[in-house]
Length: 524
Image (cartoon, rainbow, N blue to C red; front, side, top):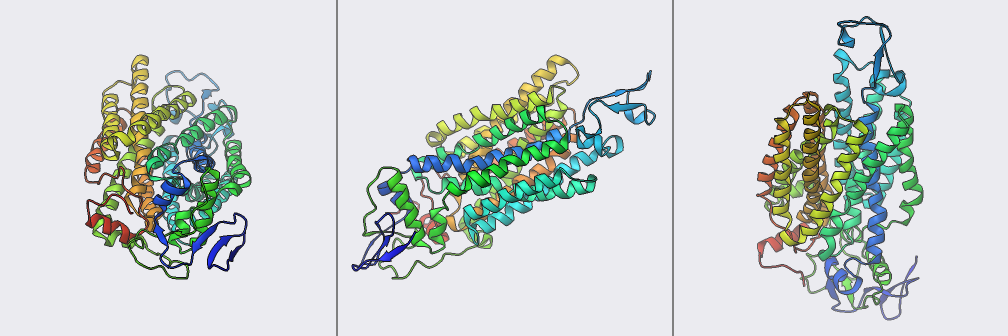
């Protein structure tokens, strides 16, 4: 798409024939939020389409993360001869028993991860999340700087498919560990980049609802992998099958996605940002953006003049977030809250193996219970605010986790009741998990948003690393730990500011200026 400068000094888009950047004196400079509200539409057809397509990446993360529950499961087994009085395979003679589905039914059976080596199941799962933690930081930085949101997501999804296929050809346990680490490295940035890319073009009044809808696809991914695993149980075939959705996304979805106009703006690429804003306006049935209106960073809106060249690139890093007294406490509290929330969420998900119920059904029910949580929290998000809702959902989950810790696991009735407590715990913490994404996005400006969310995602994955270790303890201990984490997390949220009806700032200067003037709500 070419651009040309008219004889009147206005920059036009070669196809849309609409002015992008006025070179006339004293143009009206407005922020991204204001342009969406006045000229493009906060949440029209363009944003809905972009949101749905982008959030399909969340489905990939759900599949690639939870596939390990089934690949690393303990298959059924039976004795070949009578063993009266013997209750454990570990005390049985070698060759006296066999796996019912053959050695290739899971990694546990093929690599002999039983008895003294059973800890290796939790180890490989923790290493996967360690890879996720590193990948979240790396891709969070790259998506803010060099590659952008869409470019980073493209690289991530291609790596997801490659590493998942390579995992299926692991020759031994430690090769399997290596490929699971690499899979985690790519998977860790998937949802993060997809979330920011899908929500940044949404206006202020709809941003919360749009953000809260992103994780529906993550839960759907868990349901999908449960169904796939039920029909494709050999672990190698399961990993190959789980790579196919990533390939489909790269080939058939990515070409239809646009880069975030906010990222273009903070990179100084105002022409590219304006082209996308014009497409949004046209798709949403709005009139062309006036020629005398120009996009500007929030810190530039108050300036009296605008340079004739493109806007200066705004660069910042996570160090700037830590240096700033405004964002420092936000980052530390957000990181800690996400850490405790993650222990509860991933812990309850992985704890399905300890409940003594049908594994495939339990995992599917856990994911289904998340969906009404997303709906209810999105309905009240803009009514009661981010802060009280985050506290309430964390404590709701904590209560049922604590109840579950006191229930016996031997009686069939109590097994069902404990499973229900787990489902209600997942229901509450899922609402928190989704909300923290929206909350975190609004706490930090565009120039460092993915880097800050990357730190939060790393904290999430640190909690995920610890979750398998807690689950191995068995009995009522995991539920008790999850309950304590939920209570602590709720208290931490009290130290965060409310972001309801606040602008989405682009620069550190814009945010700090607004915080210095508490009465400032809009950037007119």
